[in-house]
Image: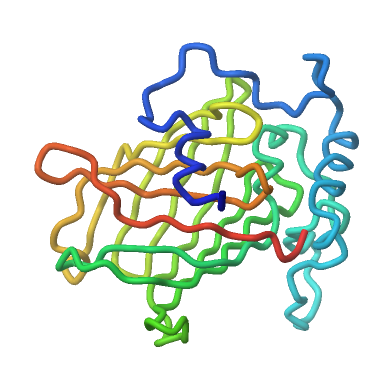
Amino acid sequence: MKDTPADAAAAAGGNAQTPQNAQNPTPDSGSGEKINGNDAVNQAAEAWKDAASRNIPPVGLDPTPIDDDTANLRQGPSLNDALLGLLPLVGVWQGEGQGFDENDEQYAFGQQLIIAHDGGEYLTYTSRTWRLDENGNSQGATIRETGFWRISPKDEIEMTYTSSTGIVEIFYGEPYNERAWQLESASTMVTETGPKKLGPGRRMYGLMPNNDLGWVDERMGDGELKPNMSAQLKRIAG
């Protein structure tokens, strides 16, 4: 049976209730003991061998005295040890998903998601989407998001992003396990020209059994959380 973005929600707890027995997100060796960063990188490289030689294309500008972003754990600066709980997210991901517009009409979209780092205690997050017609052809760019992920020593995740649609949002959450992450919006601000009805939300990210990344965004409406966007993405670099 084909994996779907809903599998990611299931991996992250499905109903988004805070798990009482969430595992430590640090990748382990199978014996329950934490492994070091090098071993974690090696595990990730083995899981995504086909994409291990690819990275974000260089911009080609004059060099700066700081490290460039990298979405490949084998290239560039070493991942900061503080980010091991988010390590599997690093990479370039691409695929398709489903969303609902302002009129609650469903539509299909393509997405490229880049989660990278520069050695600091944060991940950079960049998402670009494009609308698809019934034949899967692009109908032009739609939503862009850019932001950052951070995680504390207590495994408390902070994710912030700004959207091209006029949204600025802060999410807090925690890892459900080493392959799934669950976030809830704590602050949502919308500009005058932004979406007219955008309630607080919840996002779940999870690695599916086939190692694709699935994610789901739900929004509060009429007193309950309703699907807003979801996608299934394949790692193409990193």
